[in-house]
Image (cartoon, rainbow, N blue to C red; front, top):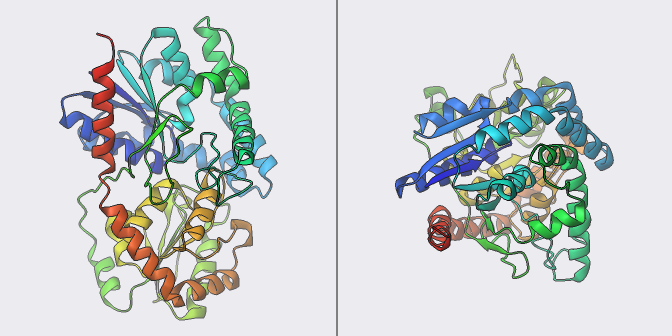
Length: 415
């Protein structure tokens, strides 16, 4: 069967889809990933076909992308996200139409779900949603992105989930309905799309030990989808790791910065205050750091799956991909959320007792980071809980569970 995986987004959105694609290919399916052009070489290196879309890294580093990330107001973030989405209207439509050509099954990430639903409706192609974060409306507080009652079930959480869904739909509505118009389909409203979307089966690529399964979201929780890549670390990194106590990792992944050099200096200052060594990842900020102090190693890139087990703790933005790998490594976390689902992961890890209270990006200073890290690194309870949760997550065959479910789903499709 020709299966198309829609992997729009940053590395954390693409990497789990590569893992799933490889597993589906291994059981005999033909797989194509639709993802940003900046990921094309990486995807192809794994032997998978790719249909390249816009360069996501360039988009995030644009003036509008930085404004989106650095806004301190949720309303301003929403307005910028909507403007950014609408500025990509034609490229998005062309990518959806071109990337799904010949598909017999489409597995869509959260970002493209409403677009793919139009393709599915128009051409009768079966679709399944792939969720890297619990975005569907539910009574469950632990499984709601922005709950009113965070740690228990309540109809208020379902109401709040509906409000979140409304905001999300509003951001995508112009592009989605332009695509539907091209297909001669009736435009969706928030209500009509919500009714249709609730019937789309979803695979929750998350651990049940982190996001408890629910019975009101038409979803199946499989476990996280991990991609373990062969990596030979550079000699200078190996030497740094061997030359002292386990360092602290600090990196914000795909989150850009208007002043990345200042951010690195701030992190270095915080680690110096508490007498700890650190590995700082440049990520997409591309910080051009000079005069690096001895207690800091500035890293261009390394797979988190290899790197994190060598760390005393990990400090990051709270993207779903980075969060999952940090949890699997079994090390304590400090999340500095910037946007989107990141506040959810920050809150959830703190609730589970494997992280200290999150620190908002605009509250980040050398002093505040040093204070949080002191608490994190001195708390044996957090360390023990993180290690125990890591063991549970490592025992979950998330990709295998997803493939087993998909094979059964495919077997039920009409021939």
